Image (cartoon, rainbow, N blue to C red; front, side, top):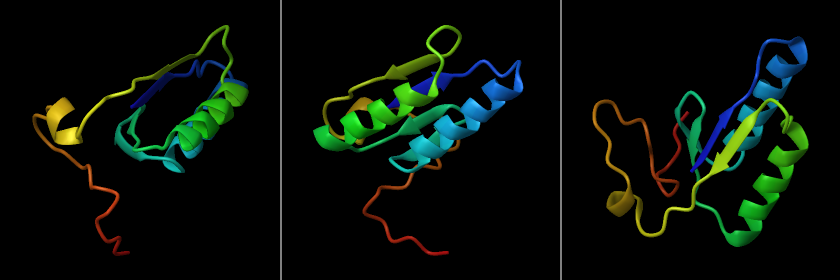
Length: 93
């Protein structure tokens, strides 16, 4: 699980926010505004982490990566609307 809080008081911050979201979208699924669920190999986790650390400003932004062990059904409780779709589901556009 990847969460972030990017300071958007400046245009540069708003740009970083867009870049962080695009990077996360390439590796996972948005489940809330700044929260992504990702099912990653160690290699892809390192790729995502490296990419995000190049984008964020460590002085004013925050990035959290949570490693959840086990199946999603065992570690995540969802109440209300759940837009998550397993990566193995077919994608119909």
